[in-house]
Length: 597
Image 1 (cartoon, rainbow, N blue to C red):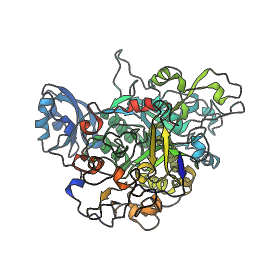
Image 2 (cartoon, rainbow, N blue to C red):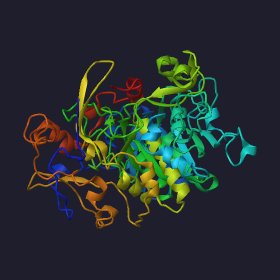
Image 3 (cartoon, helix red, strand yellow):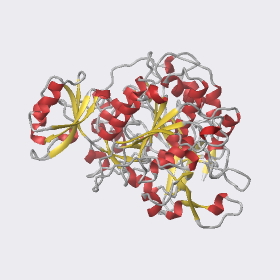
Image 4 (cartoon, rainbow, N blue to C red):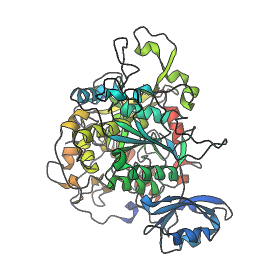
């Protein structure tokens, strides 16, 4: 069931704030005590744990010595965020936290990995026809590794045809520890990173020609790739691996012209972005001139606290600097007019800091991209997702190709935006990350239905989604419109914070004079989010009914949903939001391998 209109309506009444008035204490992020993260409390003193210690300045040998003096061990220098990754007994945490040079201590938390129709839907075909293919720009894929594939090599149509057949992966490194046999590999043992890399940069050499009925070309078919492996064969990794990989991308930026980092991975939010080491790492890359694109997460169906999936954006997608991407369904047509949001796409506002996220949405449901042989977890566990030859060859048999695979999730939507950013930077190398983000958001298509429903094919359960700024952000990726935009600003494109007016009870975006959204009509909030994205007053759809009224999702100060998002419990600890063990994004990927109807 779907209802269409050329308006982007919000879920609730909002007015734009002209200043940053003091808010009630209950609406502010919960204050932390000391420098220890909340999830380091009540540990067995004898437990050996891995921690990330952020210092107030660049750590020197004397800082590391304070850890080794307590029988700790330095494992990785994380100088990009003025930090170190250590192993130490929990009994010493209090003493470390008391050091005036220490800004914050957090555990080394686990992270997990989260085009025949998708490319044309967002204008990639038009971009290619106009000569933009990503040549000369490198995208760092920080994921489960990238296995070499014919579609990631220099094609015979490339002007440098003397290099035809050479891989476009210009650098590879793994940050995943050696396996039980002592071996380390840059190859993709999970199957996720290769799929992501294909969405960014596949040249479709395995599906292009007169004998093919479908062609699976990436967004930037001649872009180079930097393969930085941080997820193992089960799709799991650690904060420290990701931070070290980001640090390496920053170091190699000028060597390989790395202008974009793709992070189709994440974990729950445990603290403000100002202290989260993952967020601090992506900010370091952003400030170094690298566009950082992050998957929003696949928890949009999470109704744990009765908030209909709101407030489920994962870290580091909660950072206001980066471009956070949600997932749309192409409905197996090459036009965007009939496309709908994927019900599993995570929604804002962000936990604790309450930023408006995602920033935009892109195709992410049942996307066909690269697979290389059967030696990876996804193809072994889900052979039904491997694309048969008969799907894309005019004379193909029904046997599995092991060249391509269907996958679904915001992990697939993020590289759509990463590839588009590569095209933009090829066309205009002088763009800053903020200018890339601003153009993408301003030019995103803002025509959506009021609401839509989706059915999980595995369970038969139906989910309803509404198209507000916390679900679709500034709109649907339009690559050609972004390429054609020429507007510039020297201001920040940080995602705006959302606050609740203590007098009217309505929600509002907080104006920030340092951000370009505060500028005149060129970059104003209605220009970026659409005239009707911030609804003032009730409409027939969003009125007082039980399903769509303000009270249904946002409620008042006594409702469970309101307290979960805005009250004292907003510091969503592991036990409060995610349950005893926390979510595994790898399971979210598995759940949505077959997409949704």
